[in-house]
Image (cartoon, rainbow, N blue to C red):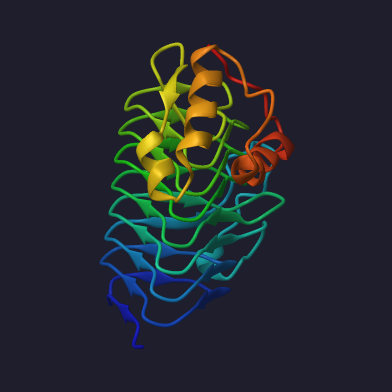
Length: 234
């Protein structure tokens, strides 16, 4: 597959491009960076500038001065216009395969975004944020640094995510609270009605389930073992 890179785009040293990639007018992609097959990067995006850490080297990657831990963009990810993704300071800032970052999304250093995630327009992620697979974050939500959002969760638009959000929860408001489960997303993922009902009952009671249904154990294990995970209930 042929890559389509606009003449006005800047692709710096240390950028590894797969096949079938689109990079739009005025976009800047700096190394170290891996861009897998089929990725679409829109006009005016800036990917790979230094982490916003006062003690970090603010290197000039556009002049071949490479530093930091890089960015990794998974296959078929879409990064719409004017979005920004910073270099990792100790691990690659990662955008998972088949994820969609809509316009004006900001992803700070060392964040890890899973596969099939949607970050709606204007979403901002602080440093070290971790987001599980198939999460949907609503427009203009802001995720505090080091927060963890479990797989399949939905975050309401404009929500300040100041606490970790468990898997498959629907969470919104200020302060953020759980308002049931993402039952539609769970059903589409093939999760049984009994598991959905068990999780719904637990969240409605303001707690995590005492016994995790077998088909949800992988998601909960990832969430509980991710750094900084703290239960959000009520």
